[in-house]
Amino acid sequence: MTPRFVVLGPGAPRFRSWRVPARDSPVGGNRPVRFATRCGSNILTVADEAGAAAPLVPDSPTLKALRDAAAECRACDLWRTGTQTVFGEGASHAHVMFVGEQPGDQEDIEGRPFVGPAGRLFDRALADAEIDRRTAYVTNAVKHFKWVARGKRRIHQKPNAAEVAACRPWLDAELAAVSPQVLVALGATAAQALYGRSFRVTQNRGRLVESPLAPSATATVHPSSVLRSDNREEEYEALVEDLRFIAALVNS
Ligand code: URA
Image 1: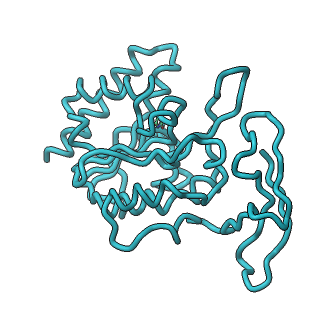
Image 2: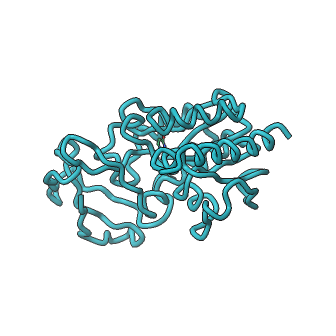
């Protein structure tokens, strides 16, 4: 989908309007996009700055209030092709929060993070590191599934910086609500969202990162990178090793 810039709204100099597909249009993958007319009700105003979801975040919210508000999020265009917002889940005052990139195909359908193939590998690695997922909070930097159609399959696409920035207020609100002792980025997208664009997971995985976001912060690889690896067993063991370090931080 290629939304087109149409007009700079007078009185709203930091906002732009885009022509957007009608709510029920067959948007997805490389199928054709039907654009709403400028006079129609589907002209969407998108904040042209980081944190477009910010106005939707309730004050001093519970996780349930956040989840309900996020279900209506239209801060970037991913809601058009995603089935639903996939909000974080887990213990409301978890000591450890894991942040992935974005929901995958199965997560998009079930509405829960890390329940697909990468999630199953993550669960196994957590168990091997003696971390009980039920005591953790698991979420994503971006809360809608971004994909393109290839035949009948929906193929994951990496979210861009604008999508990560638009979704950021939800992640900040989850961090504020859960207030974890230990914050863990899973993979580069989450790590760069949390610790800055120059952060390299390959160089800094399994080490403490100085961050104002949590008393202890760190990063490891994304579980899906283990699934894709030619050295799956070795990569899996390295992930478990990082998770053991995280378990020690949680228990310290
Ligand atoms: N990958 C992610 O980053 N998050 C999920 O929830 C599933 C797969």
